[in-house]
Image (cartoon, rainbow, N blue to C red; front, top):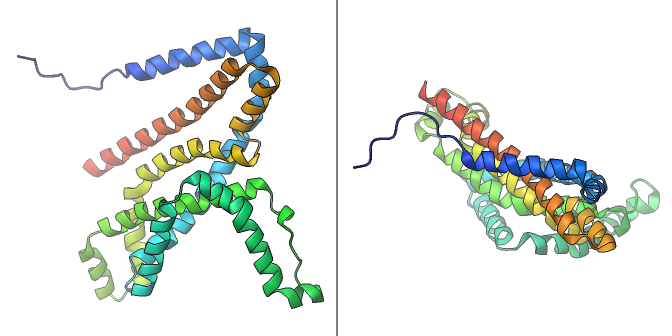
Length: 269
């Protein structure tokens, strides 16, 4: 018979193994000339990756919240439009969205702007735009925003629907408007529920941001591809690229787990 496990936190051997792997890579970067040169060549891509991810995730969060509000609206038209958006966007791969926004969406938006505002543009009131005015980074951010907003909308919808209806009805009976009820009662409680999955989706977006290299954005993956193609050090280069992605994703995953534990403890008090 197996003895009962003693209470207490287990030693995270997997984390120790990853830490040892990190120490090994740091030693290689410091002591090995090839690894040091690779790190110097691709480190700027880390900042580009984090910047693209942060901006796209912030925009996707705002858009996802609006879609979730429409999904839970009393008006059927809003619900149907929001559901159509979510189902269509979730069914399209992120890479396809990137290509579509870069080579179809951006040109069509520019053409629509110049057509609708033709007279103000002619009068010099508003500027005319060309497709080249929108960088590939901006198009990549827009594609990631659209792609992830559909998933975040479902997270927000689940959080909103998890709030007991009795609290909403009590707020309305006290004379609060529906917007006040949502802002002061529903949203704060839903936010506590959705914070951990939002953190997990942010980690997922960091990994999916590697796809923006297909548009030539100078992120970590793209710089690694360019360097390995010019030096033929594919093994060493992609070791460094994978290590840097691991540092970003695992550190953020640990932060999310810590946030979950703190929220769980606060709820138990």
